[in-house]
Amino acid sequence: MIDKAVFNSNYEIFDKEIVSEIITIYIAEYPDRIAKLENLINLGDLDQVYKTAHSLKGVTANFFDKESEELARTIEEKGRAGDSSGLKNLFTKLKASTDKLVAELAKLQKEYS
Image (cartoon, rainbow, N blue to C red; front, side, top):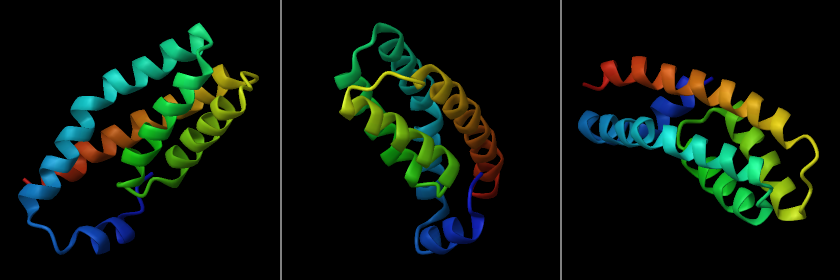
């Protein structure tokens, strides 16, 4: 869930078009990012899990969704440590959380269009 107070505070200096574009890019790239992470987890490629989760964490942090960011961080840390235990369960939680984020962003984007 987006912390809207922090989001608004951080993006208030930007033109609405720029904020809308940032949201558009995240929404457009999200399906490929999440599918890639799931595939890497299924393949057991923990080095790439680490890198992909790190990237997802970074772009998600732009929207101040602490739950999604923390889940991505946990997956990132497990990938870096070479620990595959519980990754599929963590991924399921991350996907649910980031799916909610995408839905929130789609609604929020209307305010910036």
